Image (cartoon, rainbow, N blue to C red; front, side):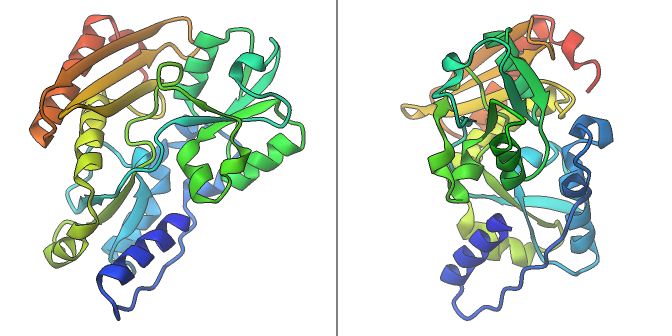
Length: 293
């Protein structure tokens, strides 16, 4: 809802006087909280009902966390704008410990992400990493109730909700590489709404769009889903790009890494280095860990 309200305010600034109404939709991914996402259909559960609203004409556009958007959208839909990215990194939250290294072995850490879980287990095999579902406030409440010693969330969500004070440590990408598109918002519309695409175009951020294109290319090439501990993160390097990718065994005992760079920052360059990183991970044997995707 914060994301929708944020986009509404941006549109009002661009198009004063335009009436913008928010149609709240509770998705299946929001409702089913007692099972892991990969057991109930994956992150697409967060967008399915929103796409139905687009098809039925109840909504003109849908706002998503980009990391929840499938790498290939079905034909009736188009991703027309990627907004300026918030902090893409993961955040360590705890009421008792200042950071990941301060956790004693045996501590219980909660996360909803196989990607985070695998990297946490690789870095700290003595921790107990347990599933944690729900929205940000629900997860924080479970931490505050003592169910977990610490939890790991996207820094972007905490900052957007005014909860940055809960962050005890920002995890460096070298320790916990982010998910493809993490921290970015994407706007989806029906592909035939070219009028609306032109109206939304000024919201797109060029640098963010290029960077997440590289990340999503890795995931697309590898068939990434929430069933696979897959990470991809692209950042600017001078006038170019540096892209890193990881594929892991769920228990963290194997972690494959690859990187690629470009001297320019364009969509074509992003697609190229995304394909290079995916190919390098496959060459290292990533297929073994991608089999269930």
